Image (cartoon, rainbow, N blue to C red; front, side):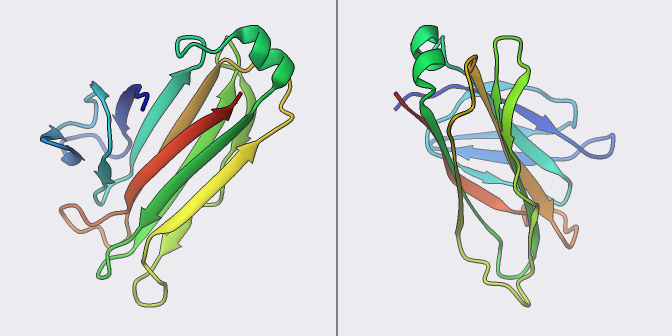
Length: 173
């Protein structure tokens, strides 16, 4: 499995708050909203808190070994997938944005479904899948930006927000 670097960023009020990013045999806790760290990610579960938190990865297709000519001529399908759920006792908001970018990081095409709000009093809070396939987007694809996250709806202190896992981006070349 290929892995890339992930840039963690946190949106919300100024000041300190915690976010736990759990990896096998490793937990990274970020204690300030301006904290930025590059880490290697394998299989993980991203837990979010009461404030808006997003995780973003930018995939450099040329650095991953894709030939620019093949990308421009074939315009391969780009498949994205993500899984999310809510706790049974606290609702959440889930957000996803996947963007195809050219060599200057200009947007070629974007997939940004509506925010999903799950309320445990009225919704099924089990795992849900979001997927999309980009096709016929034109030449120039060099980067793929994948950003997801959200927050809880009761603003409880701790890790009561949306859970996201099983994220994937595949290029059918």
